[in-house]
Length: 304
Length: 251
Image 1 (spheres, one colour):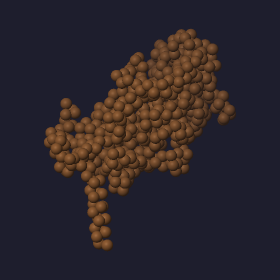
Image 2 (image 1 turned 180 degrees about the vertical axis):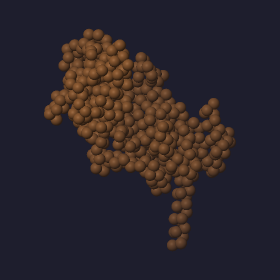
Image 3 (image 1 turned 90 degrees about the vertical axis):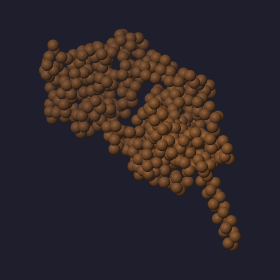
Image 4 (image 1 turned 90 degrees about the horizontal axis):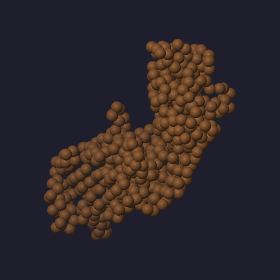
């Protein structure tokens, strides 16, 4: 019922009838390019599935299962990116025993493309994170953590761009305020910059200067704070920026049954998504690009 | 010359035209559940296996033996398992604190909610320590005045819960009024300095323990509560903690 409402509302705003859209494809020489974004957040060292006796999530999760799904989606669409929104570390003895080595090695085997840094990724100190970097064959992005005076300097980029089937995708990272959440001794000289200002700069840079077709914000800022609605959050970043197509979130362990359709500063739609925690779910967002003017003129339909 | 410029202009137009040709027309979003219906990737599974075996072997290493099963629900104002935890923090942390500062700990204060599992009768392993204390909190030592210690007394008096304590003796009457509150057998002196070991979560006001904000100094021992338990279990051949008279209420 709710899902239906979403589709209808979206149709209304873009004035696109799905039947008309499908019909056009069949006889014009138009081409569709599809980009698939897969994402996780707050996996917290949950490598093994929960056991059958678990009171909350019996038989759920597990990296080897996630690997199987990711592989089958990549076979279906090679133009796929796999992203993680932080808090990779901490939560099972695997982290205590191996300090995150296994987490990074497995993410590399799953061919993660990029991840951002969560507060718990500092749990063994910034030196503990740095020590595990050689095990990560993927990149880290964070635009609002300034690592200049730390060992992580040059190991984290503000953003990364990808070209998949001619479509340019820009991904930038955002992290949560560390003060009060993480002991200073652990994050040392890492500087936290205002996520909203940075998101405004980054989205402009990626859309206008880098000419990205798709701009993704990989955030560990948190979805929304009910008791403190003005606190910086993914929903507030969505509202305060333009040119972002998708915010992939983390930190608040928010289980969204489907991505949220939010409005940006210009009143345009964008998606905000988060898949809870512990690798219980894999988020999937497919972006379809078309070169048929009769289609493109009619805007974007969103089905969630 | 003009001709050449014209060609460039066309080329640029075509280039941008091509690029701009592709526009976002549709977005589909959903979440995929990771559950037992998915056949795990065998290569990944095989890669994890030796790590899992090592962790499990280590976690199941027997350190001690519990003569009975102890739950935080057994006991009204102090429990055997809570006393064991507070005593373990006192025993394991005091030598470190003393070496660093020359002072002895006076009190240990933990929280009832921080005991995350029972201690089962039988072999006690590293896994037991993970079960009782899955969190990463570490021991910190606050420097408080006697007036702040009285705030702790009043907190415990109102909480009516068996928060684990060591070093302090507290008696309440049947109406929850304090009959006596002593530290190492001595009455609390308002202006005296006391060293209170707790964990960083509580020190930062967790469980409404706001009195820690008056701490004039904090000593971080870099000693996780879980490691305190592991070390304590390693040193104790058998565990037989008891409910005692450290915090009681007269009926």
